[in-house]
Length: 200
Image 1 (cartoon, rainbow, N blue to C red):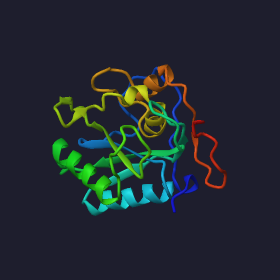
Image 2 (image 1 turned 135 degrees about the vertical axis):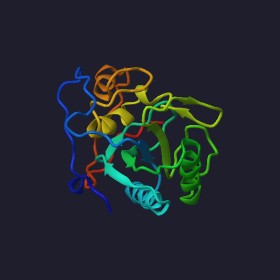
Image 3 (image 1 turned 135 degrees about the horizontal axis):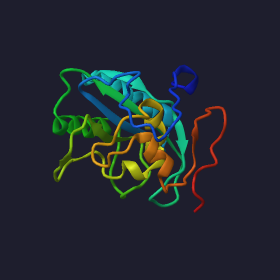
Image 4 (image 1 turned 45 degrees about the vertical axis):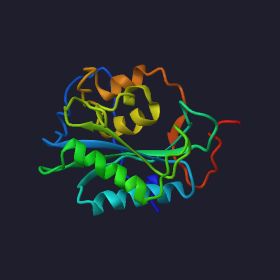
């Protein structure tokens, strides 16, 4: 089981700072992946996804804390657990290959895409691949809605507040400070039951 007590968190201060991680330089090749689950053993599903990323030969450099988040852009359903993983390495797979790997892990862990934006055992969102800009039928980089989603920006800002969005030219901290998404996002407390699920 993974808990926030076991994860070192990174705080940020000034959202208007535009330096590129001068205190902790990013590796030349880095990827950010969002993980989410709102069915079954949510924390267990996140752990299985992390293990699957490692089994696929991917190097996980850092993990954010786990956040419990209110469902958005969808209908009433259970609250999510969300987090972000930073991958790095000199031999990361190509963006298309990595996307195929993420989809394969979702399938292996039992995700079935029956209802658009419906509840899911696991969700792996490909957020960023360095400064890569890409728009193809199967993959858009950066993720086209990441800057509109507090459940992505909160854990991402914990890891890399000063990272500049390749297309929007704003830091992650700036995007978080100005997002119009007012949904509730809070650090997960496993001993407390959730009340973030939307009412039917």
